[in-house]
Length: 185
Image 1 (cartoon, one colour):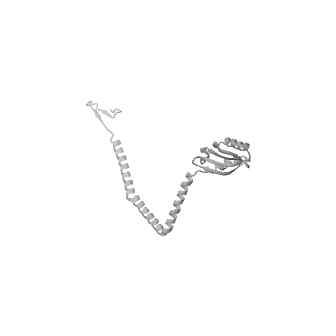
Image 2 (cartoon, rainbow, N blue to C red; image 1 turned 90 degrees about the vertical axis):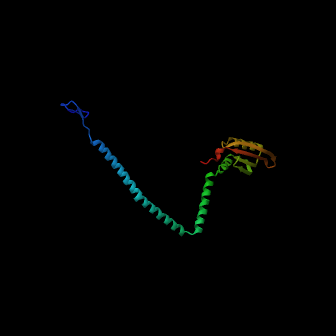
Image 3 (tube, one colour; image 1 turned 60 degrees about the vertical axis):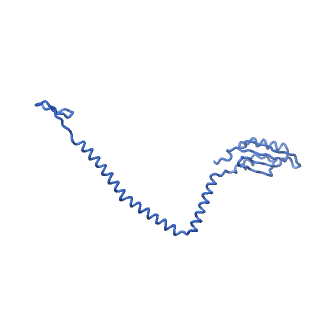
């Protein structure tokens, strides 16, 4: 009589006999051996077949590059290198360049018609515009100052000097612009 666990009972001697299945360990061994052999064959194929092929391609391409380099005169190579260097420097400058074009619409849109400027100086480091000009009257100058105070891009307006002259009121003032005026968009 045989039990589900694989033991077999003999009725004559009352001793249990054990039977084992031999197929499973050999199947695992053969599968492992197949994977190992496949890995070794793949490695040898890459090492002795594909690697020399790639090295020969690299050598051929390097030879082609050397031939091409020798076909271009040294003076042209130096000229191209200098030009490329200038382009790279220019690109770096343009990436870090702060545009001052934003100040002109601010002045144009906020300047009173009865005021004109005869001197404009811009200091990027301080975000400061120095203005000198003539207003028709103190009333026109005060209207101009109020217009500057209404502009959201202007942080501060300071009058340095004002003086009545025969043309009207001569003035010197400066504007401090907000930092976001110069941010690139």
